Image (tube, rainbow, N blue to C red):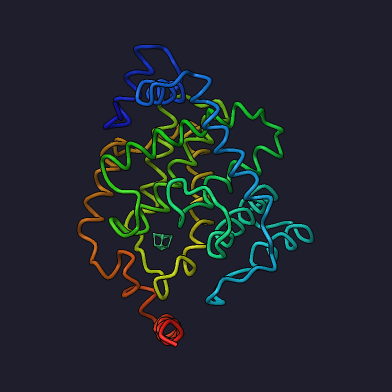
Length: 293
Ligand code: SF4
């Protein structure tokens, strides 16, 4: 039984006096008929894959189109030499998001959570936090259940794919999932998790999907950065006690409505927005010529 709303999850948390992550774990156990250990081991497998993908980043790799690659290494060098304006931790988060986005564009192994295009957001917040705070692996597993629960509700009520609802659905959903995960890691409660997710989506509402030449490279790699940075800002707001004025489930519904209203040229067709700039069209033409060569 998948949850249809964040409110349903919060209700189970209240009634059963269990944390957000455990409601999702129990749901997985019921749905897949697995034990707690089996469910947790699967989630930990996901985490290990995320961690090893992050560690396998190669700054020398460039995508086939030549559009992306190396930025993760440049950012890494910058944070070693300078104090980033956003602070040392945020610098690491930016580097991690770029690296995973570039690894995806270079066809390396990634964890598509929730999608390949937005694969950099969750690891960008989790991996630096895990390494800096020496967090127990099991705590990261719990955070991933939180992320999974948020993603599942968004998928049921709205979309998680750019082709369906624009980049708000892809990077926005990933950002909401990451925000909820971070609230959990910092000891926040279920209500704070829901509000962090809602604020993340609100901040990215209306974001169009406009990949140059239809490739998940430009602007996708750098949008993973904004998804991660936004997630941390929203997690901090929620942990401070700030709430989304619009109830969380209504925010998700608004995202669905905005996605439905979005012109098809702005939903991963590579025809509008940045893809339609002179540069974007030039790349698209070149890609087309190479395809038929
Ligand atoms: S622009 Fe489109 S393809 Fe790129 S990350 Fe956003 S939703 Fe995904």
